[in-house]
Image (cartoon, rainbow, N blue to C red; front, side):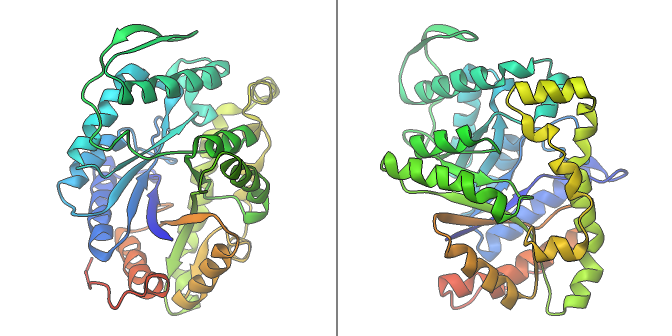
Amino acid sequence: MRFGIYAEMQTAPGKSHSDMTWEILHQIEHADQVGFDVYSVIDHHFFQKFSISANPLALFCAAAQRTERIRFRVALITLPLENPMRLAGQVAEADILTRGRLECGLGRGHAWLFGPSNVPLEESRPRYDEAVEILISAWTTDKMSYAGRFYKVQDLTVVPKPRQKPHPPLFTGGTSDITYQMAGQRGWGILVPPLLPWGVLEKPLEIYKKACADHGHQPNIVYIRPVYLDEDEKQIRKEVEGALHNFLAFNASPVESLQGEAMKAELRAKGYGFYASGALESLTKLTYEEFVGQEIGFIGTPEKVIRQIRNLQAKGGIGELAIVSNFGGLEHWKSIKTQQLFAERVMPAFRGDAAVSQVGA
């Protein structure tokens, strides 16, 4: 099992965007020093509390100059809002500048991004499907041609080409069964949304694992959970409870832009029914005890979290646990604390590491 970190770059009102960005960069450096395998950052615009991560490729290119071995994953590029012919070269250049450490998530994106981006919601799926074919062709052929509904190119040469061959490892994620089916068929990794309990995920993950088996691929599930560690349960609650409630509220905050019965009917009709279901809003009502008890987050002592990860392993197909160490306005030192404790006390239980380097905040 790999161990990664995932960040949305949630930014509380009043927090400097510059400070937030540099804190994340320092946390990536620390993650590299203590032995995490991969750092994932969402691609997201327009809603500060949810995320200010508007250019993860740029962030990773900067981080690559300050790190030695950690890999970088965009989770996920909102593909229907991009020009795939241009994006192919941008991803390839980032792969070169990260010295072949890039991993690429390709998603349809959150429903609330389409209105501000001036792209009709109903175009998300067909634009996504066309863009995937264009990207793969652009990365793997000297000249490409494509004739689709949205994109038409003839004998196009896309440069540069990625350092990794045939291209960086690909992932996707989401809430619809068709996404899990497609990922399994193509042999892509799948990123599990960080807020859903295992019971909700079990059915789509079985679809994914079956599709992998049917097409000769190994499942690669990236299981994302917020994590907070300390030796004392009371101290944990004191330090993290407010940030956990913010994490839920910040994740649900963009739903305010999708209100009204007409909008909800449109969401259901255009393949984004999850956003009309009230699921995100309901999460904001969870108590601390429910959040911890339902294992929406792995919150507790290192020994408790080790047991939770072992139970997760037993479910099969989990290739990576990606912890969320920065969420809901959590202070920088608390994120570093969790990364350090996780590397020192949790990861060796699964890797047999003799020691993990001691790195201060």
